[in-house]
Image (tube, rainbow, N blue to C red; front, top):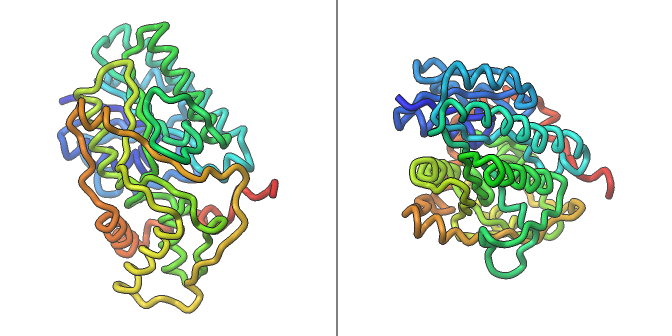
Length: 341
């Protein structure tokens, strides 16, 4: 049985990836430092599985991470551990530098030592489309220059550069992926879609930055996870792969779609109305990826359209009210990223 380490596995994408890996008969070791966005509710379905092991550890603790990989001898490592909320990076960029850059550096140092004994092991480093910055026209290709706008995006861009430098200099068997905006079950409600759903449930206004015209390429989390496993199994070492749906919608359209879904399923409170608020500093207008490399070379394509995905996401939160109870309320309702407005 192949063993896989997933870092950040108590988070959104990590927990969904673990669920999929377990269904495909992998043994999974989940390494998570347990931050504000970690949620043990995300792994309740499989935490008692004999094919699953949780270990609390920080990537910056190089000795502990090395002990874990030496003990379990994984065949691959998916690195999803990261600070990811742009608004928080505006208020406190230091945490993003420490975790997204130094954390990746320490993981790379650990992985270098591991592959000396296990040469067939791969590192899949998961990144974001935000490294490309504002894309007003067209779609970003893997060969396009990075131009990050936020401290978060800059920290992820830096981590990508670090990983690639280790590929070139130390012949590290690694692959870098850049994915568009994910949505789906188990996502922290600091992000747009689960924030809107939370506010709908709790009869609160629906805050939208600016005029709601910022456009994102939306991909259902299961489609992203399927792509990651495809890249693990068939991707080429040293390559970058964009992962996207090729479907762009602005924030206003997303909000109206969720409201329509909600009205068909629950009674909407009188305070549930769109409320335009001051935009955050440096807010990019549009992200968009060209994923043709992944589609053509690895024969992957997304399966879930936006209507299906939003309905499925809404249903999951509706059926899992216990998810919110595991989070601090201030982390759900407090607005970040406006200190410098």
